[in-house]
Amino acid sequence: MKKWTVAVVGATGLVGRKMLDVLTERNFPVGRLVPIASANSAGQTAHFHGEEIPVQVISEDVFNGVDIALFSAGGSVSKTYAPIAARAGAVVVDNSSAWRMDPDVPLVVPEVNPAALENHNGIIANPNCSTIQMVVALQSLHEKYRIRRIVVSTYQSVSGSGKKAMQQLADEISGDTVADPAYPHPIAYNCLPHIDVFFEDGYSREEHKMIFETRKIMGDDNIQVSPTTVRVPVSAGHSEAINLEFENPFELDEVRSLLANAPGVVLQDDPHNNIYPMPLEAADKDAVFVGRLRRDPSITNGLNLWVVSDNLRKGAATNTVQIAEVLIEKNALVLTD
Image: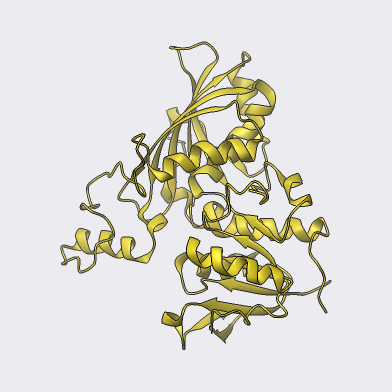
């Protein structure tokens, strides 16, 4: 089997470290690993397959000989270095928002739109974590009934904001002083309807992402999306309450069957026996968990459902690695010897 030189940019961050775990767990064919981070991580190592590999400081030359570059280092880094990596011969899979809405860059969830990978210019975008789990849950239903409208409220964990946010939650719960808060308000025992910056229309950037990324991934600009995104005091795992309006009628038993057989989905829908998706149960798993299925009696062809997934895995690292796997399957990487 062909082995590949794989760079992980942002290798010392939460998602970067999770990417290393996922590459190991999925037996990705790594011939040589190149962990990359900012100068702040100089001297650190990345643990991979039992080895401690020195982290390289990002530069224009660090991508020479790299086949696949998995980026999770923020939008500004991706904007600067993803084109450099692509020109050096690497195929970039970027986890930031830098390239997602570029019409020339595929925005991909392998369970939903893998065909988009057949035409790329060296950069592929990984969607927002909340969007990923939603479209995985909804794709089979859209194909069958055609979704007209989505109303979604998210309950997003602090791990989506990084290490500083996780430390803030831990310090607040333990009663310690928060030296450098990630949020403008306490997060322990609280909910913040505030993820990223707000725009003039009153929606946040996170909410805009869910609107426009959903349409691009599902290939349907007619889908109407009304999101409210909320940060909650959960360490890991995002939850979503989703209300759908279909164009066509449905039967709940058929919906359950579709979801039970949908790629990447695990159906947990037996509320009378306390079986439904929860972040604690989804932690460290790659699936998207769906439950609490019920008709919406207020509209025709309306459905309510509850969707949970580990945001650091399927919402970020796992989806990124899955994209790289599909690139190999489709022979969409340039071989470098």
